[in-house]
Image (cartoon, rainbow, N blue to C red; front, side):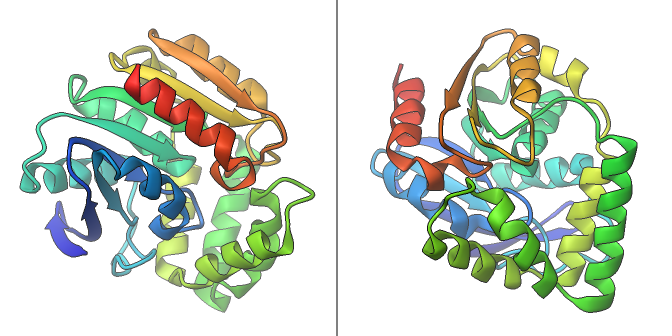
Amino acid sequence: MDLIDAAGLRLAVTDEGAGAPILLLHPFPLDGSVLDPVVDFLARDRRVLRVDYPGFGQSPPPAGPVPLEAYARALREVLAKKKVARADGFGLSIGSYTLIELSRQAPLFFDRLVLVSSRATAASPESRADREAMAKRAEAEGVGWIAEIWAPLLLRPDAELAARRLLEKIICRATPQGVAAAARALADRGDQSAAAKGITAKTLVIHGGEDRITPLAEAELLAQLVPRSELEVIPGAGHVPHLDEPDRFHRAVQSFLRD
């Protein structure tokens, strides 16, 4: 693991495997370790660069706000320092929104994108208010309460207890500053429809059929907006489909990246 200073942020980056590079970005309010199963199969024949959002995993907490535009700029610097000129990208939830923004900033950087549990529309006023309330409570009380609420929501309703306990453990490692920054980045994320329309990379949109956080209609709209995209719906999976239905998820991703 490397700690890399980029655009005013210090980001933890793991660099594993060899071959064509792919950037992996994790969902909120988890860290990069939740993508361990994805790394396991991708790193067999790919160079996998996994980054923790500030204040999550091994990335130190940020000193202030980290909007998606700033995070994307920092990632561009990280990749340049890693001597990566072109890559594929894999992002889940906030990770996917960041890839859309990064594609807007550097339209020709990505060859292929995998956008999981994603959307292009802006947060609703209700959602923005919820995220701001979440940020303030995390700053005041810490993150334990978030684990109790979010761990079950991220998974399908009948998920095994072990999976829920895993997510609770990961969430509790987050810093209050990181949760607050990410929650506000989500609240302030504007409509990304124009950016989605401008994506030049071949794109796979993956969505769980039982996602209780992002409606399937949002993924369908995103797939319509991105010019060279296809939609894969995984029945029986929630917001983290690689945990709920790993075999089908891995097959879909591998088939797309190798096509």
